Image (cartoon, rainbow over the protein chains, first blue to last red):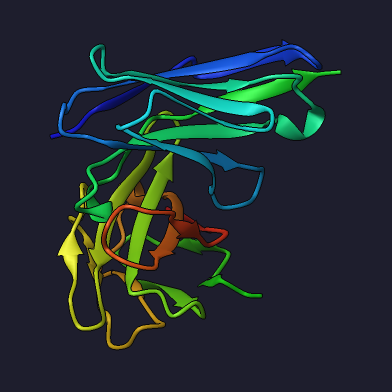
Length: 113
Length: 113
């Protein structure tokens, strides 16, 4: 089955700098890659997703890139702000079944003032 | 807008006791899910339901059962709790069974002693 690895497990960056979180997946059939943000005491919330027919997607300060050949995808946050501090999860699945979505182990991002 | 409501928010339970975690959604989503979140392991799917009246097993179903008598409710039962079931449990829903956004509740923290 699918296996998703996420790195780093913790990340601390200076406010205003960029943050990058990387994930790899094992199942070449996976073609949907969402990213979730979990704030303290809350449930995860979808912030951006990418499907396998594109290599990059941007939404304001966040962007995701996908390399299907290497089976890895990344989350990029530019001009980081204090409210970006949270745990971020990557995930992978096929279109056909949301019940098969596999999450990475999470990255705790801290933004230093 | 309530979305997904989970109860209780926190519970301490003696090993061997029976416990039901409640989950209710008001979005009329067809699919519902139960995940457990453990440090370093991310989110792992316990059970899911693609529509009322049907359920399926996820990655870590042992020791848990679910039912889906109607669209809105998806309770998770631990028949005889064990310490390894100490975790934070998240209920989620999605509009359909094909891959798309998961909407999470705020979690139920369960401690089994």
